[in-house]
Image (cartoon, rainbow, N blue to C red; front, side):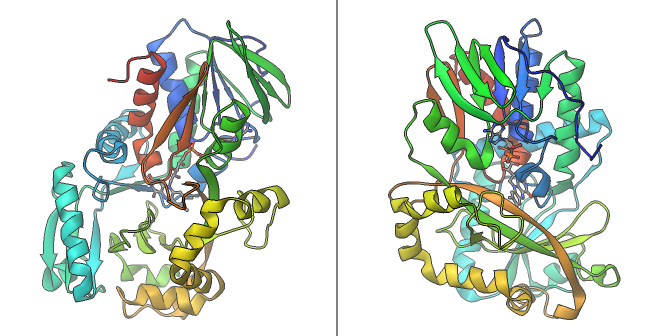
Length: 411
Ligand SMILES: Cc1cc2nc3c(=O)[nH]c(=O)nc-3n(C[C@H](O)[C@H](O)[C@H](O)COP(=O)(O)OP(=O)(O)OC[C@H]3O[C@@H](n4cnc5c(N)ncnc54)[C@H](O)[C@@H]3O)c2cc1C
Protein backbone atom coordinates (compact mmCIF):
# COMPACT_ATOMS: atom_id res chain seq x y z
CA UNK A 1 0.00 0.00 0.00
CA UNK A 2 1.45 3.42 -0.90
CA UNK A 3 1.87 6.08 1.79
CA UNK A 4 -1.56 7.39 2.69
CA UNK A 5 -3.44 4.60 0.91
CA UNK A 6 -6.42 3.47 2.91
CA UNK A 7 -8.26 0.16 3.23
CA UNK A 8 -11.23 0.32 0.90
CA UNK A 9 -14.03 1.55 3.20
CA UNK A 10 -17.55 1.14 1.92
CA UNK A 11 -19.19 4.51 1.22
CA UNK A 12 -22.38 4.73 3.30
CA UNK A 13 -25.76 5.10 1.60
CA UNK A 14 -26.86 7.38 4.43
CA UNK A 15 -24.95 9.50 6.92
CA UNK A 16 -25.41 12.75 8.79
CA UNK A 17 -22.58 14.82 7.37
CA UNK A 18 -20.57 14.18 4.26
CA UNK A 19 -17.29 15.80 3.26
CA UNK A 20 -15.99 15.55 -0.30
CA UNK A 21 -12.22 15.61 -0.72
CA UNK A 22 -9.53 14.05 1.48
CA UNK A 23 -6.97 16.80 1.15
CA UNK A 24 -5.87 18.50 4.35
CA UNK A 25 -8.86 20.87 4.31
CA UNK A 26 -11.52 18.19 3.87
CA UNK A 27 -9.91 15.94 6.47
CA UNK A 28 -9.58 18.80 8.96
CA UNK A 29 -13.24 19.72 8.40
CA UNK A 30 -14.40 16.12 8.89
CA UNK A 31 -12.26 15.83 12.01
CA UNK A 32 -13.69 19.04 13.45
CA UNK A 33 -17.22 17.80 12.76
CA UNK A 34 -16.58 14.49 14.55
CA UNK A 35 -15.18 16.40 17.55
CA UNK A 36 -18.19 18.71 17.71
CA UNK A 37 -20.80 16.06 16.95
CA UNK A 38 -19.50 12.79 18.38
CA UNK A 39 -22.84 11.05 17.79
CA UNK A 40 -23.12 12.09 14.14
CA UNK A 41 -22.18 9.74 11.30
CA UNK A 42 -19.51 11.58 9.30
CA UNK A 43 -18.20 10.29 6.00
CA UNK A 44 -15.47 11.51 3.65
CA UNK A 45 -15.66 10.70 -0.07
CA UNK A 46 -12.38 10.88 -1.99
CA UNK A 47 -11.82 10.19 -5.67
CA UNK A 48 -8.18 9.02 -5.40
CA UNK A 49 -7.00 5.80 -3.73
CA UNK A 50 -5.25 7.75 -0.96
CA UNK A 51 -5.46 10.92 1.08
CA UNK A 52 -3.46 14.08 0.28
CA UNK A 53 -3.01 13.04 -3.36
CA UNK A 54 -3.10 16.54 -4.81
CA UNK A 55 -2.10 19.95 -3.43
CA UNK A 56 -1.65 18.73 0.14
CA UNK A 57 0.94 16.15 -0.89
CA UNK A 58 2.84 18.48 -3.24
CA UNK A 59 3.46 21.62 -1.17
CA UNK A 60 6.57 23.42 0.09
CA UNK A 61 5.84 22.15 3.59
CA UNK A 62 6.07 25.61 5.13
CA UNK A 63 4.05 26.54 8.20
CA UNK A 64 3.46 30.17 7.34
CA UNK A 65 3.51 32.68 10.18
CA UNK A 66 0.92 35.09 8.67
CA UNK A 67 3.07 37.88 7.25
CA UNK A 68 1.71 38.43 3.77
CA UNK A 69 -2.00 38.66 4.24
CA UNK A 70 -4.17 41.78 4.30
CA UNK A 71 -5.08 42.47 7.96
CA UNK A 72 -8.72 41.57 8.52
CA UNK A 73 -8.73 38.92 5.77
CA UNK A 74 -9.59 35.30 6.49
CA UNK A 75 -6.06 34.33 5.46
CA UNK A 76 -4.55 36.70 8.04
CA UNK A 77 -6.76 35.50 10.87
CA UNK A 78 -6.79 31.80 10.08
CA UNK A 79 -3.10 31.52 9.21
CA UNK A 80 -1.95 32.94 12.54
CA UNK A 81 -4.43 30.93 14.62
CA UNK A 82 -4.08 27.89 12.35
CA UNK A 83 -0.29 27.81 12.66
CA UNK A 84 -0.60 27.95 16.45
CA UNK A 85 -3.14 25.12 16.43
CA UNK A 86 -1.00 23.09 14.03
CA UNK A 87 2.14 23.33 16.21
CA UNK A 88 0.07 22.21 19.21
CA UNK A 89 -1.45 19.35 17.22
CA UNK A 90 1.95 18.18 15.98
CA UNK A 91 3.38 18.31 19.51
CA UNK A 92 0.45 16.23 20.81
CA UNK A 93 0.72 13.63 18.06
CA UNK A 94 4.52 13.45 17.93
CA UNK A 95 4.64 14.78 14.35
CA UNK A 96 7.91 16.54 13.57
CA UNK A 97 7.38 20.28 13.06
CA UNK A 98 10.31 22.63 13.33
CA UNK A 99 10.66 26.40 13.39
CA UNK A 100 13.88 27.28 11.59
CA UNK A 101 12.42 30.68 10.62
CA UNK A 102 12.75 32.49 7.33
CA UNK A 103 13.95 35.69 5.73
CA UNK A 104 12.17 37.76 3.07
CA UNK A 105 14.91 39.53 1.19
CA UNK A 106 14.88 42.81 -0.76
CA UNK A 107 17.74 42.96 -3.24
CA UNK A 108 16.85 46.30 -4.85
CA UNK A 109 15.77 49.73 -3.58
CA UNK A 110 12.43 49.48 -5.39
CA UNK A 111 11.50 46.47 -3.24
CA UNK A 112 11.85 48.35 0.06
CA UNK A 113 8.32 49.75 -0.02
CA UNK A 114 7.00 46.20 -0.50
CA UNK A 115 9.13 44.97 2.40
CA UNK A 116 7.80 47.78 4.62
CA UNK A 117 4.23 46.83 3.69
CA UNK A 118 4.92 43.20 4.62
CA UNK A 119 6.33 44.34 7.96
CA UNK A 120 3.20 46.44 8.56
CA UNK A 121 0.90 43.55 7.66
CA UNK A 122 2.85 41.01 9.69
CA UNK A 123 2.81 43.24 12.78
CA UNK A 124 -0.91 43.98 12.36
CA UNK A 125 -1.56 40.23 12.04
CA UNK A 126 0.34 39.49 15.27
CA UNK A 127 3.17 37.47 13.70
CA UNK A 128 5.49 36.61 16.60
CA UNK A 129 9.06 37.93 16.55
CA UNK A 130 8.90 39.57 13.09
CA UNK A 131 11.80 42.00 12.69
CA UNK A 132 13.53 44.09 10.05
CA UNK A 133 17.23 43.24 9.61
CA UNK A 134 20.00 44.88 7.58
CA UNK A 135 22.45 43.31 5.15
CA UNK A 136 24.94 42.32 7.90
CA UNK A 137 22.39 40.63 10.10
CA UNK A 138 20.95 38.86 7.06
CA UNK A 139 24.43 37.38 6.53
CA UNK A 140 24.48 36.14 10.12
CA UNK A 141 21.17 34.34 9.59
CA UNK A 142 21.90 33.18 6.03
CA UNK A 143 25.67 33.39 5.38
CA UNK A 144 25.31 32.80 1.62
CA UNK A 145 22.47 35.27 1.02
CA UNK A 146 22.75 38.85 -0.14
CA UNK A 147 20.26 41.65 0.02
CA UNK A 148 19.96 45.27 1.07
CA UNK A 149 17.36 44.56 3.77
CA UNK A 150 15.22 41.69 4.98
CA UNK A 151 12.40 40.69 7.28
CA UNK A 152 13.24 37.89 9.67
CA UNK A 153 10.38 35.66 10.81
CA UNK A 154 11.66 33.24 13.47
CA UNK A 155 8.19 31.66 13.83
CA UNK A 156 7.98 30.27 10.29
CA UNK A 157 8.24 26.50 10.35
CA UNK A 158 8.32 23.33 8.31
CA UNK A 159 6.30 20.14 8.50
CA UNK A 160 5.25 17.28 6.25
CA UNK A 161 1.62 18.13 5.41
CA UNK A 162 1.14 14.65 3.99
CA UNK A 163 1.91 13.24 7.44
CA UNK A 164 -0.43 15.75 9.08
CA UNK A 165 -3.22 14.78 6.66
CA UNK A 166 -2.65 11.08 7.37
CA UNK A 167 -2.83 11.82 11.08
CA UNK A 168 -6.15 13.66 10.59
CA UNK A 169 -7.36 10.60 8.67
CA UNK A 170 -6.31 8.33 11.55
CA UNK A 171 -8.17 10.60 14.02
CA UNK A 172 -11.25 10.25 11.86
CA UNK A 173 -11.04 6.49 11.69
CA UNK A 174 -10.51 6.41 15.46
CA UNK A 175 -13.67 8.49 15.91
CA UNK A 176 -15.69 6.05 13.80
CA UNK A 177 -15.93 8.22 10.67
CA UNK A 178 -15.46 6.56 7.29
CA UNK A 179 -13.11 7.67 4.52
CA UNK A 180 -14.17 6.05 1.27
CA UNK A 181 -11.65 6.30 -1.55
CA UNK A 182 -12.29 5.68 -5.24
CA UNK A 183 -15.46 7.77 -4.83
CA UNK A 184 -15.20 10.45 -7.50
CA UNK A 185 -18.30 12.60 -7.06
CA UNK A 186 -20.33 13.00 -10.25
CA UNK A 187 -23.57 14.73 -9.35
CA UNK A 188 -25.25 16.52 -6.46
CA UNK A 189 -28.95 16.91 -5.84
CA UNK A 190 -30.91 18.35 -2.95
CA UNK A 191 -34.40 17.86 -1.60
CA UNK A 192 -36.26 19.33 1.36
CA UNK A 193 -34.83 16.57 3.60
CA UNK A 194 -31.36 15.74 2.31
CA UNK A 195 -28.49 16.23 -0.08
CA UNK A 196 -27.57 13.28 -2.29
CA UNK A 197 -24.06 12.88 -3.62
CA UNK A 198 -23.76 10.49 -6.57
CA UNK A 199 -20.28 9.03 -6.93
CA UNK A 200 -18.30 6.29 -8.59
CA UNK A 201 -19.33 3.74 -5.95
CA UNK A 202 -23.03 4.58 -5.64
CA UNK A 203 -24.73 7.45 -3.84
CA UNK A 204 -24.56 8.90 -0.33
CA UNK A 205 -27.43 10.80 1.25
CA UNK A 206 -26.75 13.20 4.12
CA UNK A 207 -28.24 16.11 6.05
CA UNK A 208 -25.47 18.42 4.86
CA UNK A 209 -22.27 18.37 2.82
CA UNK A 210 -18.98 20.25 2.80
CA UNK A 211 -17.17 20.17 -0.52
CA UNK A 212 -13.40 20.57 -0.30
CA UNK A 213 -12.36 19.47 -3.78
CA UNK A 214 -9.33 21.71 -4.34
CA UNK A 215 -8.67 22.10 -8.07
CA UNK A 216 -12.11 20.65 -8.90
CA UNK A 217 -14.10 22.73 -6.41
CA UNK A 218 -15.71 24.96 -9.04
CA UNK A 219 -17.11 21.95 -10.91
CA UNK A 220 -18.75 20.50 -7.80
CA UNK A 221 -20.12 23.91 -6.81
CA UNK A 222 -21.66 24.30 -10.27
CA UNK A 223 -23.05 20.75 -10.02
CA UNK A 224 -24.79 21.86 -6.81
CA UNK A 225 -26.30 24.91 -8.50
CA UNK A 226 -23.73 27.59 -7.62
CA UNK A 227 -22.38 30.28 -9.92
CA UNK A 228 -19.51 29.31 -12.23
CA UNK A 229 -17.68 32.41 -11.00
CA UNK A 230 -14.88 32.02 -9.88
CA UNK A 231 -13.37 29.29 -12.03
CA UNK A 232 -10.35 27.27 -10.96
CA UNK A 233 -7.32 27.77 -13.16
CA UNK A 234 -4.38 25.44 -12.55
CA UNK A 235 -0.90 26.89 -11.99
CA UNK A 236 1.89 24.35 -12.01
CA UNK A 237 4.70 24.86 -9.51
CA UNK A 238 7.95 23.05 -10.34
CA UNK A 239 10.79 22.59 -7.86
CA UNK A 240 14.49 21.83 -8.03
CA UNK A 241 16.52 20.47 -5.11
CA UNK A 242 20.01 21.33 -3.94
CA UNK A 243 22.55 18.57 -4.26
CA UNK A 244 23.22 17.16 -0.76
CA UNK A 245 26.80 18.52 -0.76
CA UNK A 246 25.50 22.07 -1.45
CA UNK A 247 22.78 22.17 1.21
CA UNK A 248 24.90 24.47 3.35
CA UNK A 249 23.95 27.30 0.96
CA UNK A 250 20.62 27.61 2.81
CA UNK A 251 20.08 27.39 6.56
CA UNK A 252 16.44 28.41 6.93
CA UNK A 253 14.17 29.65 4.12
CA UNK A 254 14.89 32.53 1.76
CA UNK A 255 11.93 34.27 0.10
CA UNK A 256 11.66 37.21 -2.30
CA UNK A 257 9.49 40.29 -1.78
CA UNK A 258 6.43 39.13 -3.75
CA UNK A 259 4.66 40.97 -6.53
CA UNK A 260 1.76 42.65 -4.68
CA UNK A 261 -0.49 42.16 -7.74
CA UNK A 262 -0.27 38.36 -7.54
CA UNK A 263 -1.28 35.90 -4.82
CA UNK A 264 1.91 33.81 -5.22
CA UNK A 265 4.83 34.25 -2.84
CA UNK A 266 7.54 33.96 -5.48
CA UNK A 267 10.24 31.34 -5.91
CA UNK A 268 12.03 30.58 -2.67
CA UNK A 269 14.69 28.32 -1.16
CA UNK A 270 13.39 26.18 1.70
CA UNK A 271 15.23 23.80 3.99
CA UNK A 272 12.86 20.98 4.90
CA UNK A 273 12.78 18.64 7.87
CA UNK A 274 15.36 16.20 6.56
CA UNK A 275 17.80 18.93 5.47
CA UNK A 276 16.68 18.66 1.84
CA UNK A 277 16.60 22.15 0.27
CA UNK A 278 13.84 22.78 -2.28
CA UNK A 279 14.00 25.62 -4.78
CA UNK A 280 10.80 26.98 -6.33
CA UNK A 281 7.97 26.72 -7.08
CA UNK A 282 7.48 28.36 -10.45
CA UNK A 283 3.90 29.40 -11.33
CA UNK A 284 2.91 28.43 -14.85
CA UNK A 285 -0.68 28.27 -16.11
CA UNK A 286 -1.11 24.74 -17.47
CA UNK A 287 -3.51 22.58 -19.45
CA UNK A 288 -4.57 20.14 -16.73
CA UNK A 289 -5.63 20.40 -13.11
CA UNK A 290 -3.27 17.53 -12.36
CA UNK A 291 -0.37 18.60 -14.62
CA UNK A 292 2.34 17.03 -12.47
CA UNK A 293 4.02 16.40 -15.81
CA UNK A 294 4.37 19.63 -17.79
CA UNK A 295 3.06 18.06 -20.98
CA UNK A 296 -0.12 16.66 -19.47
CA UNK A 297 -3.15 18.30 -21.08
CA UNK A 298 -6.75 17.38 -20.36
CA UNK A 299 -9.13 18.68 -23.02
CA UNK A 300 -11.90 19.60 -20.55
CA UNK A 301 -9.49 21.42 -18.20
CA UNK A 302 -7.89 23.29 -21.06
CA UNK A 303 -11.25 24.20 -22.61
CA UNK A 304 -12.53 25.49 -19.28
CA UNK A 305 -9.45 27.65 -18.81
CA UNK A 306 -9.46 29.02 -22.34
CA UNK A 307 -13.19 29.69 -22.48
CA UNK A 308 -13.15 31.68 -19.25
CA UNK A 309 -13.16 35.45 -19.89
CA UNK A 310 -11.05 36.00 -16.77
CA UNK A 311 -8.19 33.99 -18.28
CA UNK A 312 -7.80 36.43 -21.16
CA UNK A 313 -8.06 39.46 -18.90
CA UNK A 314 -5.39 37.97 -16.64
CA UNK A 315 -3.12 37.20 -19.58
CA UNK A 316 -3.64 40.71 -20.98
CA UNK A 317 -2.61 42.25 -17.68
CA UNK A 318 0.22 39.96 -16.59
CA UNK A 319 1.69 38.66 -19.84
CA UNK A 320 5.21 39.78 -18.87
CA UNK A 321 5.07 37.73 -15.67
CA UNK A 322 3.58 34.88 -17.69
CA UNK A 323 6.52 34.92 -20.08
CA UNK A 324 9.00 34.96 -17.19
CA UNK A 325 7.20 31.97 -15.64
CA UNK A 326 7.30 30.17 -18.98
CA UNK A 327 11.08 30.68 -19.02
CA UNK A 328 11.33 29.32 -15.45
CA UNK A 329 9.20 26.34 -16.51
CA UNK A 330 11.30 25.53 -19.55
CA UNK A 331 14.84 26.54 -18.63
CA UNK A 332 16.80 25.48 -15.57
CA UNK A 333 19.24 28.32 -16.23
CA UNK A 334 16.42 30.93 -16.04
CA UNK A 335 15.06 29.30 -12.88
CA UNK A 336 18.44 29.42 -11.17
CA UNK A 337 19.24 32.93 -12.35
CA UNK A 338 16.06 34.17 -10.60
CA UNK A 339 17.22 32.61 -7.31
CA UNK A 340 20.80 33.74 -7.73
CA UNK A 341 19.58 37.24 -6.87
CA UNK A 342 19.44 35.97 -3.26
CA UNK A 343 22.21 33.36 -3.26
CA UNK A 344 24.81 34.50 -5.81
CA UNK A 345 26.93 31.35 -5.41
CA UNK A 346 24.09 29.17 -6.67
CA UNK A 347 24.75 27.53 -10.03
CA UNK A 348 22.95 25.07 -12.30
CA UNK A 349 25.51 22.44 -11.27
CA UNK A 350 24.21 22.65 -7.68
CA UNK A 351 20.72 21.36 -8.37
CA UNK A 352 18.79 18.17 -9.02
CA UNK A 353 15.26 17.78 -10.38
CA UNK A 354 12.49 18.14 -7.81
CA UNK A 355 8.78 17.46 -7.58
CA UNK A 356 5.93 19.54 -8.98
CA UNK A 357 2.58 20.61 -7.56
CA UNK A 358 -0.47 22.21 -9.12
CA UNK A 359 -2.10 25.14 -7.37
CA UNK A 360 -5.87 25.46 -7.53
CA UNK A 361 -6.23 29.19 -8.04
CA UNK A 362 -9.70 30.74 -8.27
CA UNK A 363 -9.95 33.30 -11.07
CA UNK A 364 -12.86 35.73 -11.34
CA UNK A 365 -14.70 36.39 -14.60
CA UNK A 366 -13.23 39.89 -14.43
CA UNK A 367 -9.67 38.53 -14.46
CA UNK A 368 -9.01 39.01 -10.73
CA UNK A 369 -7.04 36.30 -8.98
CA UNK A 370 -9.07 35.61 -5.87
CA UNK A 371 -6.74 36.20 -2.98
CA UNK A 372 -8.62 35.28 0.19
CA UNK A 373 -10.12 31.96 1.24
CA UNK A 374 -13.67 31.67 -0.08
CA UNK A 375 -16.39 29.44 1.35
CA UNK A 376 -19.84 29.76 -0.19
CA UNK A 377 -23.24 28.12 0.27
CA UNK A 378 -25.78 26.25 -1.76
CA UNK A 379 -28.75 24.40 -0.29
CA UNK A 380 -27.49 22.01 2.41
CA UNK A 381 -23.89 22.47 1.27
CA UNK A 382 -20.81 24.57 1.89
CA UNK A 383 -18.23 24.89 -0.85
CA UNK A 384 -14.57 25.70 -0.26
CA UNK A 385 -14.01 27.56 -3.51
CA UNK A 386 -10.60 29.05 -2.86
CA UNK A 387 -8.14 27.47 -0.45
CA UNK A 388 -4.67 28.22 -1.80
CA UNK A 389 -1.58 28.69 0.37
CA UNK A 390 -1.60 29.10 3.37
CA UNK A 391 -4.61 26.77 3.59
CA UNK A 392 -2.48 23.81 4.68
CA UNK A 393 -1.04 25.89 7.54
CA UNK A 394 -4.53 27.22 8.34
CA UNK A 395 -6.40 23.92 7.99
CA UNK A 396 -7.38 23.45 11.64
CA UNK A 397 -8.59 27.05 12.01
CA UNK A 398 -10.30 27.02 8.61
CA UNK A 399 -12.06 23.79 9.59
CA UNK A 400 -13.33 25.38 12.81
CA UNK A 401 -14.64 28.34 10.79
CA UNK A 402 -16.41 26.03 8.35
CA UNK A 403 -17.96 24.04 11.20
CA UNK A 404 -19.26 27.34 12.63
CA UNK A 405 -20.78 28.19 9.28
CA UNK A 406 -22.40 24.78 9.07
CA UNK A 407 -23.95 25.37 12.46
CA UNK A 408 -25.28 28.68 11.08
CA UNK A 409 -23.21 30.65 13.54
CA UNK A 410 -20.33 32.25 11.62
CA UNK A 411 -19.06 34.15 14.64
C1 LIG B 1 3.25 23.88 -5.14
C2 LIG B 1 2.49 24.20 -3.89
C3 LIG B 1 3.15 24.65 -2.74
C4 LIG B 1 2.43 24.95 -1.59
N1 LIG B 1 3.09 25.28 -0.44
C5 LIG B 1 2.39 25.51 0.70
C6 LIG B 1 3.05 25.74 1.93
O1 LIG B 1 4.28 25.68 2.00
N2 LIG B 1 2.30 26.00 3.04
C7 LIG B 1 0.93 26.03 2.98
O2 LIG B 1 0.31 26.30 4.01
N3 LIG B 1 0.27 25.79 1.83
C8 LIG B 1 0.96 25.51 0.71
N4 LIG B 1 0.31 25.22 -0.46
C9 LIG B 1 -1.14 25.26 -0.47
C10 LIG B 1 -1.74 24.00 0.14
O3 LIG B 1 -1.08 22.85 -0.36
C11 LIG B 1 -3.22 23.97 -0.20
O4 LIG B 1 -3.78 25.21 0.17
C12 LIG B 1 -3.95 22.87 0.56
O5 LIG B 1 -3.28 21.64 0.41
C13 LIG B 1 -5.37 22.77 0.05
O6 LIG B 1 -5.93 21.61 0.59
P1 LIG B 1 -7.28 21.06 -0.01
O7 LIG B 1 -7.70 19.95 0.86
O8 LIG B 1 -8.23 22.20 -0.20
O9 LIG B 1 -6.93 20.59 -1.49
P2 LIG B 1 -6.25 19.25 -2.04
O10 LIG B 1 -5.12 18.82 -1.20
O11 LIG B 1 -5.98 19.49 -3.48
O12 LIG B 1 -7.40 18.18 -1.87
C14 LIG B 1 -8.59 18.18 -2.64
C15 LIG B 1 -9.08 16.74 -2.69
O13 LIG B 1 -10.35 16.70 -3.30
C16 LIG B 1 -10.40 15.50 -4.08
N5 LIG B 1 -11.44 15.65 -5.11
C17 LIG B 1 -11.47 16.54 -6.13
N6 LIG B 1 -12.56 16.36 -6.88
C18 LIG B 1 -13.23 15.32 -6.35
C19 LIG B 1 -14.44 14.65 -6.70
N7 LIG B 1 -15.18 15.01 -7.76
N8 LIG B 1 -14.85 13.63 -5.91
C20 LIG B 1 -14.13 13.25 -4.83
N9 LIG B 1 -12.96 13.84 -4.45
C21 LIG B 1 -12.53 14.87 -5.21
C22 LIG B 1 -9.01 15.42 -4.69
O14 LIG B 1 -8.72 14.13 -5.16
C23 LIG B 1 -8.16 15.84 -3.52
O15 LIG B 1 -7.77 14.74 -2.73
C24 LIG B 1 1.01 24.87 -1.60
C25 LIG B 1 0.35 24.41 -2.75
C26 LIG B 1 1.08 24.05 -3.88
C27 LIG B 1 0.35 23.49 -5.07
